[in-house]
Image (cartoon, rainbow, N blue to C red; front, side, top):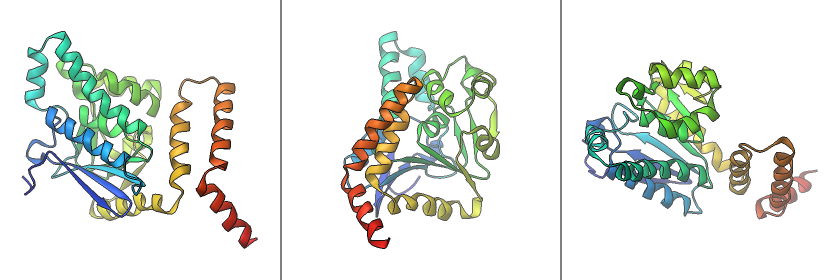
Length: 256
């Protein structure tokens, strides 16, 4: 266990808000307390204008192994109403990530399994160490990662999603990148520095433009082509009126 016993650690380094799942002795398994603390940390980052990007990582040897034993026991013992409230609490994590105005990046080392793989998938970007492993083994205990399916289906093809969710196999970081589940795979020995270099790129681009782009991409989900173009036109106009765009145009014109 690390010296700080909080289930989630929060650190602001320049414009990067670092969120660390801090239950290494439990492979950062998801508990009610951890989920509540994770939601608080995401809200904190979203309310800080200095933040350009958020990273989520795990302390110790793994990113996150999914629900812990107490959470599984709670599922078995709870009523329908209690299970519904529990499921919606996790759903709030996924919606918070989508609604945050800045990119949320999962930095995955070790294993990201079940709910842990779902958490990584829910992030806007996923970086993985070469030895990382991903998987949705819930089917092996008769469970369905149903909310995660909504996210996974948007990340990978229908047939890939079907395979991952119904066979419950672990896959390598390389396979995950080939499927579209992971953006970049970095060597284990340089994973931390490579990840830092990647996320720091967001300090060099417009915060408002990135925020509008994130909103636009997710707003387009399910829209017909013409409706998507109309939405894009609206965002185009909004972007033109932002301070970042006005300053960017002025800088460009001075160089011409």
